[in-house]
Length: 415
Image 1 (tube, rainbow, N blue to C red):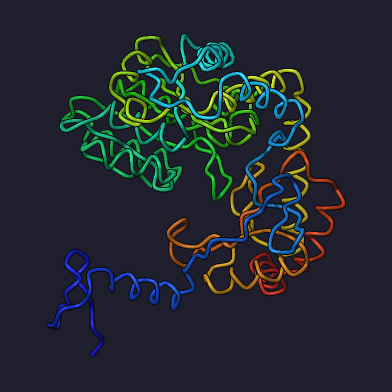
Image 2 (cartoon, rainbow, N blue to C red; image 1 turned 180 degrees about the vertical axis):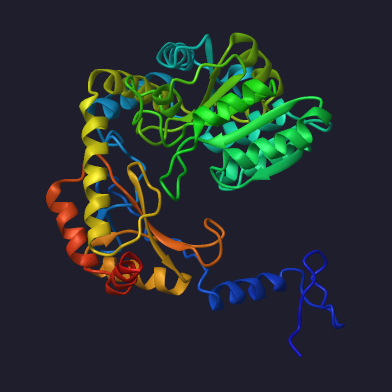
């Protein structure tokens, strides 16, 4: 009989004492058996479209540096200068003495960029979501959340203590059913969704969701982490692209993806920002981000505004890559963005395909549960403005043709 261990006490449920941390080895063994054990990758020192580590130089198709700004000399120079004048760390939370004039200027510029009254910086995008959601909703309130929301939104919902209703992914009709059934009993109502989903690369039906928010007088929180800088005429994200205007709109973004820096932010009315500065625990109790990264983000804002060709060319290249992958028999789901999933299925198969690509010189890690549901493991291709046509050609050659899915697709079309 296999021994199982109590999570809390470390005592065997079948009797006898076991050291308090022995259960961890059992958990790791189970993850290994299910092909879900993650190992820390090699330390990659060069972080551009090329990465280096453990004696390898690989073409990177896993980065969220969508506009290719993370190593841009202009951002590097701004960060270096700020580091020399303000130091490395900030030493305290923003409310004590951690907020510098650079942070204040970045918040002002973010509000201007996003066409809102004010903005608030957080140490990361995760911290923003994990702090904002519980600040907006509590016991007696109702949250309505997409089934494939980012982990930071999920954790924010859990921390809020509000009753959370999960609607089927991108299913506005199901959201409407849940709102009709539960919104009237709640003190306050909050709808929470990513705009661009980080694993599948698909887009939320924002017009329908915004219409439902208006109908039920609900707050609407949109996480634009993967869309800011890439979508919209001005690069403000998918809410801009969809023309979403609503008094109850709260937008969360990150500086660590298209902006090539680090940190998260929230934009909205001044009253909202003042409230979050008092109630969002991940803001109040976190040391402020380094001023050097804020300085780099300030430069990135100018680049996004002045060089729109980065995003237009990126999205055009992504559309072409999706078509070529599909022609080779690979399933890319409902992706409409620079994030392109290659659906595989079993975790072991995703790991094997990732390893094959690594041996060919490409870094494309396997995405497995809990990042995706069981049986839906995939390879997540993340296209950036720095990828050359030759790099994309090489990746496609290394992938080859997915004969099994191609045959299944042909049979489906014939039927």
